[in-house]
Image 1 (cartoon, one colour):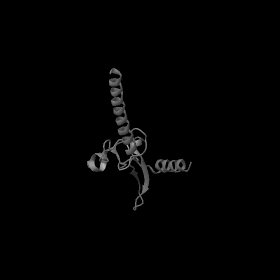
Image 2 (cartoon, helix red, strand yellow; image 1 turned 90 degrees about the horizontal axis):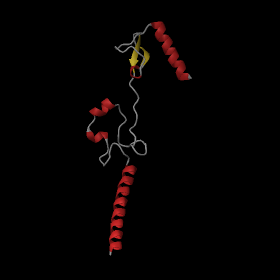
Image 3 (cartoon, helix red, strand yellow; image 1 turned 180 degrees about the vertical axis):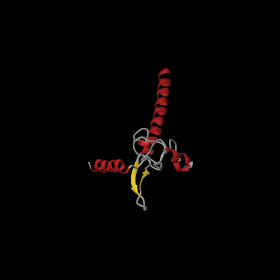
Image 4 (cartoon, one colour; image 1 turned 90 degrees about the vertical axis):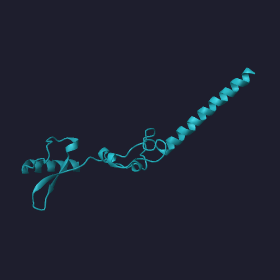
Length: 125
């Protein structure tokens, strides 16, 4: 309720003081969030805030990925490849535990196939 009160106060100050947006977008959308700020000259102006970042999550277990920075997509595009992910198979999309379990599962499936082939050969004899 405290945040609502602050927002209501800011909205009221905006209405009373006649502060307008500084950019072209004139609607209260997610990408157009502003903070009412007083400059050293005593003037009320809007300061635009950036969207909050989210941590990248593992595609399988949905746990946060280590070694991948939590930045907006535009900033992520500017980062070098070694910063974006971990130098491992499925580096920037799966966590180490899930990769390990995938490798073990694939190995066991292959082993099972070999065992089945051997048993089939034995029954033929």
